[in-house]
Image (tube, rainbow, N blue to C red; front, side, top):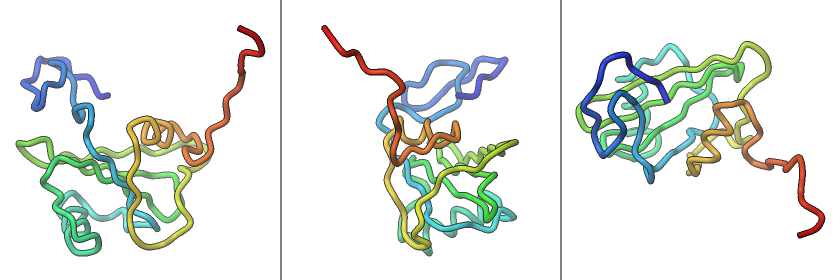
Length: 131
């Protein structure tokens, strides 16, 4: 979550001073690569035209560039569109191999994706062997 230095009135019960979707917000990943020159209006039009969805209902849409190092997140917070971007310095964001459609993600999967972890097949590092 991004933190603001000044208190904000956040929609949907979010903590004051935080920008981000409320728990239970639907998260969609746009399969394939997207032209990262698009801004919030271009990405909103893409959500409407390519996926037949309404970008103003509060869902988060994730888009990845061709090289896989940049992700843009489009989200309507109830007052206006928000556009967030993250670029990895090393590695790339794991993405589905299909080039069309969208995939619904859980908040945990989206969190792993934004950390650069392969959300499709996470591996536990340690399991207890006895109770």
